[in-house]
Image (spheres, one colour):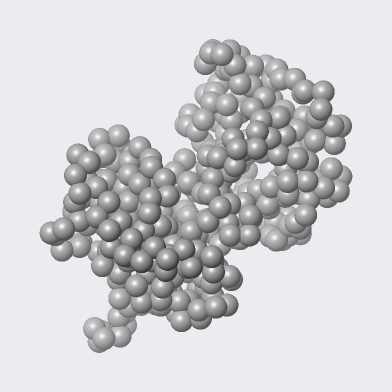
Length: 364
């Protein structure tokens, strides 16, 4: 984080110039003369702390972010006692971090605390045109309530007449997908460490009855210490009944029950973990084929092969996760205790196997 701040200082006036880069759907600069913000109160239980690397150096950042992100409970009718709500004027906008179908993500800095974050800017007209407003509401509702070191934080949100803004934790090392492309494949130690972090985060999500349903390298980010962060909860679902039948996510990572249109539960994430482990070690997904139909057929029949260089340990783990019957897949608790994982991972579970065991996702 210190390096990030130094880079920002060196950039000087780039914050003001980059602010004009938030564009409307026509591609024209559209920040000057914005209408008054119709600011929406952020999620009620916003962050109670900022990432450790920042809070240790700037304790005032924590109180500022917390104060603005939490809403007022309002027995106190005195306006001065109410928490300030977010608006675009609270932020200095930096360089683009990524571009998506419905908008862009920018590096940003909260003016008062100088707290570094990511600001996801989504255009309402594009969300409405694609009919994904419900997906965005679900993403905000779910991600804003999750608290785990390997889940990207959503600190709050607001909107104006044309855009929706999500205030997100900044993962300074970028996408796992880009890192994988750069090095082609990961070694066993790095793969086992990522598997530990991901399994631990999913165990936490499942204990909160949240199914991600779209685990893939593009939806995983890396924090300032290289730690894995699950992001993009657009396809996730908070499922008290634990069963869904919607087809979503990316075909290479979808389990048989989803592509075949059968009901599914949190065990879809176990399948995705197996696919991810394979891709980390090999560089390509296990069911990747030339055509959509061939990929579909390979997933349905669970047909894949290991290259000779994949050792027995990861072969055993992957084969126990890629089971056609969801109930035959290795539970996350067992993934964390798998001999190959424990022998190679440099991290220990943070959520705790014992804790998750007491809060199993209910079956219906």
